[in-house]
Amino acid sequence: MSSLVPIFNPRALRLIAEAGIVFITCACAPQSNIREQIRIPDPVANANLLLNRGDYRSAAEAFAKLSRRNNGSKASQFKAIAALAYQEILDFEKADTLLDEISSDVGQISPTATLVTARSMLHLNAPTDAYNIAEAIDEAALDNYQRGVRARVMGTAAVATNNAAAAADAWVSTHRFPYPVDQKAVLLRETWRAVSRLSESELLLRSSTENTADRGWYSLALITSRSLFDRAKFRQELEVWERRYGRHPANRLTQELVARAGILPIRPRQIALFLPFHDNQLDAASKVIRDGFIAAWFADPYVELRPKLKLYSSTTNDIVTTYERAIHEGADLIVGPLKKNLIETLRNEAVFKVGLLALNVIAPDSTSTETSPFLFQFGLPPEDEANQVARQAYSNGKRAVIIALGNSWGKRVVNAYTNTWKQLGGTILGTAWYGEESQTYPKAVKRALNIDLSEARAIALDRRLPIDIYVEPRRRADIDVILLAGFSHNARQILPQLRYFRADDIPIYATSHVYDGDVNVERDRDLNGLIFGTMPWLFNAVDVGVFESIRHGWAIGNASRGRLHELGLNPYLLYGLGIDAYRLIPHLAKMRYKRDLKIHGGTGVLQISYEGVVHREMSWLKFVRGQPKSIDQPGGPHVH
Image (tube, rainbow, N blue to C red; front, side, top):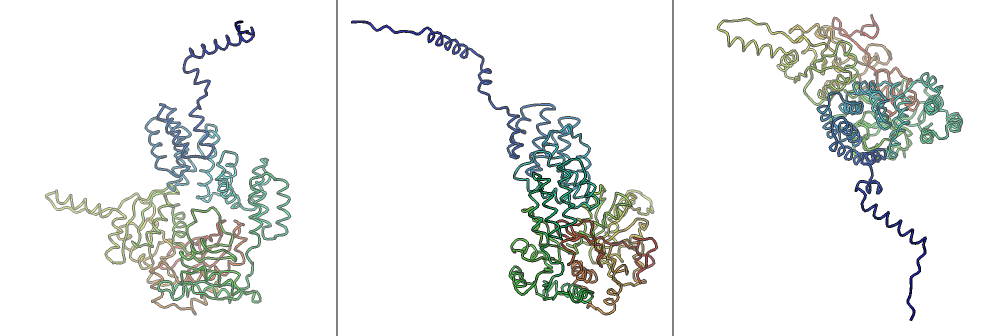
């Protein structure tokens, strides 16, 4: 029997031996070398990957975790990046907590932490501070993602402060930096909104820039401004632009611009006027607006082009059905409704087929970045006036006190005063409230001037001393300006009190509500020195003939006046709203895209934002010897 002898190949033996040596070497190698060979992901690289993907919540948690595993400046930097990521998901509470920790960890915060501060100021409605802080950051000290955040902060802040040039610079620059794909639509919308606010002359200048990407934005905006309402010319120029900038991000906007071109008739054939007739609160306001609208219709010089008018009562909540019915009955433009809730219903539920000029202003839709080209809004919100008053008054100094009527209308005005004043960089020293009862006026003035505290100190001193003393209460000396929120009868009570307490040297500003449009020299001497914004129509700056005809031929009952004043509404201003609404109609679409196009209306100088909201610039008057006198032009005309 023969034995089986294995036959070994010498080369195979050598390979087996080498394999054994490798195995032994690996078995004896340090554990860290094995980890390196397995390649465990770097936690910092992983956190940055999450950030660049736009998974901000996971990125924030990853960087926060890294900050706990490190110390010193490295930990602070991780906290700052985590705070930026939390701000992306609007969790400002966690972001501010991390910012507080950074401030206590190190003496001087990093550029990244400074960027967090700027964004936090923006969230606190302080866009001027946010812009200044972000602008001062050395961009070279930031990475690409952070540079994009800086650009977005500056762009948003510049839009909020109406700095069109800075807004365009910032938003156009954001496209050079990383941005999540799912937020590209927002980036496009904000960039276009900023660029479209520039005047034609500015766009012409910028469209020659050497940077091709930037030039694409400005060239498209210039074409739109010049030609949007000539559809054939617009399409022709757009084709040239598309051939030149084929891969430009703004290409996503061109089809929408084509769709918007010419959707509103310059001269509608039939207008449906939606007003809440027979509504307990708003019936009087509806009739005044209606009368103004019809007066403008009669005064339209293009008699053969005047549209048909049809009135609809919009007291019902089924406003969408009313909208559809008006279109079915021939309307190619709707004016109204007046109630905010009905405007919101139409915006959210109606399928827009014709243009709508709403007669109020509602809050933007937070769930959508789209702005319907069919929807325009023109109202008389007290906040709009209060913002202008604050800006006008700010030239007198940074420290203000507010004296305000303590109802819901007064609170709205105070909020607007306060927000705008703080945005400008000023300080509100205090707010004093009064009611309609006569005893509340001196109490409010005392609180505003700190007279009540001075009196309290005098009483306390008198109690402690064994002798009789006489102490004259003194007002606070640090007030630069007084902002008043009230109506004419309130102001006639407040101003004498201010003079009594020796505060007549402080400039006093108010909204148009302090003047009801009727001249009464004897009654209004108490208002001397008061500065207020109002509609130019009231002092014969525009439409002299129309105003004189309604002053003498149009009457509104005292009961109706009382109801309107309770709602914070001036009858003359409502009448002007009706007139200006009619006169805006031929220019609505064009004004939306031509920011330098203005109309001198009865209620003010009118402009329309990209969002379709009509803004009016008031005129400024001051009571002198019982009469309001224009201060827009020195030596301007008196109201007769």
